[in-house]
Image 1 (spheres, chains in turn purple, blue):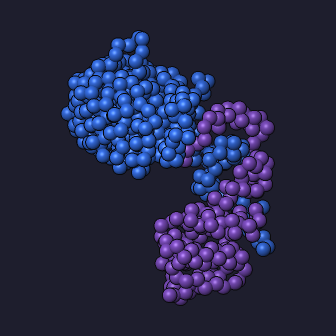
Image 2 (image 1 turned 90 degrees about the horizontal axis):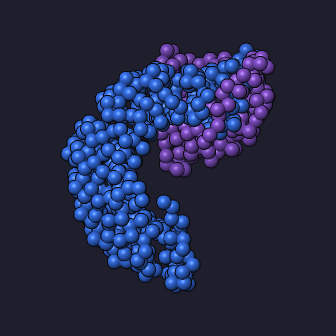
Length: 164
Length: 367
């Protein structure tokens, strides 16, 4: 299997197997545009993030061999719950946020779905202020606007659970 | 693991709307979503865009508030709505697939606008007496993805509507509850129309205008899997004229998986026919069928598919009849009988086989 070389923002180089590299829409686009022998530069990706992504792919391959299900092809993210807890516990809030952004940038669908789930778990039962801190979001409401929103739309959050 | 230079307070601090939406897909709890919407203006916008289900159940909610939720798939409203309102709803939320309207006057123009403006509209429930034939024609003719129609407490619509529905080949679910102007003629339109080939679920509850003549025609429904023909005897309405003639005709529908036949005029003859012919039947609800007795129940004692049996309101049967079902039906999961039997010594659990004990359920009869 051909190996694709990538270089992260801090100068580290990684070798990815071609089929795994192609899971990233961004890398795939670069490969289509340039020769496969060139090193692909990923200035928005840090080395620790790359390590984490490779860890994810390795685990998926392990599970695929064990269960005989092509998780990546079928996009069966839910089966990966088995190791989500493990994947999650090393990541601080900041790290998860950065990883989420990076995986979105790289366009790795299956991993993105998993990370969104992990991120969503961290926002549950949190106050509005904690959510702002978690995501580093600027508070852009005036107190009047905030009160207005709360009052005008409280009905939208009543009643039975939303079915998605 | 060190946090890298690209930190939250650095150049990338804002997640895209799409990414926020993806995260929000995993947040179903309403309180969490409420907090989410109060974080900042972007999040308020994304929460609205991401919302797929909403119910307007208070009169003071302005319809204009819908503009915040353009991607609604499921929308319900109990407010008084006009045709102009419906047009607005269809324009604002073109993705609507499932919708309920109660107690409104809804006319031809409004329902046409709804069907036209929401190409994915597949399930519509209309409650109340103010929706007439013309309006329903407009809906059936404009909503090309329509698969499910429900009418409740409507004495305006009548048999011609069933003729229009009868020629709609895409409808798989039809429910009529307390619609007093539906008669055997209407059932005939359904049975003889192309919908008889596609209909999977049919509910005829409290429809006082139907008799054996109409019910007999239902045997033409060749794909029907769920059928409910129920009528509660009440002092205000005359007794429904459906007997074993209609009941036995229903047993000819071999595709049936679920059958609710809560009718006074049904007796053992129907049940025997059902046991013999409806080999795929999984759920049988005979609540209120006073004339059904032990012999009828026993007819099911070697049925291969039966899972749930409801015998509430029946009088003339005993434990041995239920045991024959429990021991003879391999897939049986529950048999529901009246709560009063629990106190009856003839129904004491010491007299029951273990299998019977595991499936029997005592319940309050609720009419």
